[in-house]
Amino acid sequence: MEHTECDELNPARKAPHAAIGQVLIEALPYIRKFEGKTFVIKYGGAAMKDSCLKNIFAQNVTLLRKVGIKIVLVHGGGDAITKMAEKLGLTSRFLHGRRVTDKEMISVIQMTLAGKVNQDIVQLISEHGGKAVGVSGLDADTIKALPHPNAETLGLVGEVEQINTDYIDLLCGAGLIPVIAPIGFDDDNIYNINADDAASSIAIALKAEKLIYVSDVAGIHVGERILKTISKREAADFIERGIISGGMIPKVLSAFKTLDSGVGKVHLIDGKATHSLLLEIFTHEGVGTQFIAEQESDHY
Ligand SMILES: Nc1ncnc2c1ncn2[C@@H]1O[C@H](COP(=O)(O)OP(=O)(O)OP(=O)(O)O)[C@@H](O)[C@H]1O
Ligand SMILES: [Mg+2]
Image (cartoon, rainbow, N blue to C red; front, side, top):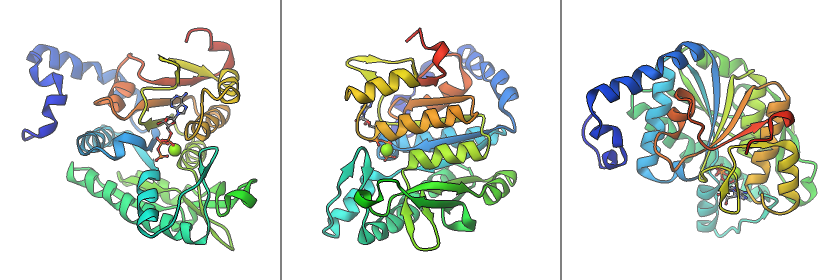
């Protein structure tokens, strides 16, 4: 690959050849284990904004697909929506990490998420040699939604009612990477679906091997400390005490729903750390925070 401005982020460039070879070969058992398995990756936060991080993320995803792992991306785009809404003179309001969505805002979301944000990701992956396909939740009935229980205050915010996996399976089976914009529908409306919730439901429906949330924090923090693991009981307590707040609330709640529904591994990793995705998948090193069942929760 040609030299790029991101190279200073890459310590391996300075490592001796034997060390590089060793690092590469360490991935082999993981490649053998995960070949043909499905990973759902929720892409949000800083890794979606910074151009170096965006490129590295797209490379990581392409590599994972090329070694035979079925990758399904679900993206957020809260910042892009807020900026576009602002340009159009609309104010963004949030309630417990969810965007209050009226008729005008759902149009902005549709245009920004399924349009610009989604296609930018597709293009970036294709620049690195991957083959991605943009999918809105409306395509081929992929995300059927219900109004959110707090619809009276949240407006056109939806919950996933059902994921139709046919189209996603078709794309994955053809070696393509579905890039899914979290928008849902019912007979009456189009709904804004929190991307974490959408990723969770998609991982459950696909019986994915792993769900990985890529965000802009090193993991779940309690004060200065980054938790290596978190259990449902601890999470409920941290939410109650305001230690977990804002956009982290839907992420944590959907993470435990996913775990309870049989997806074995659910992780939150740092989109700001170079190659965190590859490290999470191809090494023993734990990066970020793993969501775990109650009985394992004594070692954070
Ligand atoms: N205890 C906590 N540990 C870590 N982050 C926390 C915590 N409590 C609140 N947060 C906030 O949650 C944010 C992550 O959620 P956010 O919804 O902003 O990002 P995202 O879901 O990755 O992106 P998007 O919503 O665009 O898809 C962090 O940037 C942080 O400000
Ligand atoms: Mg979020």
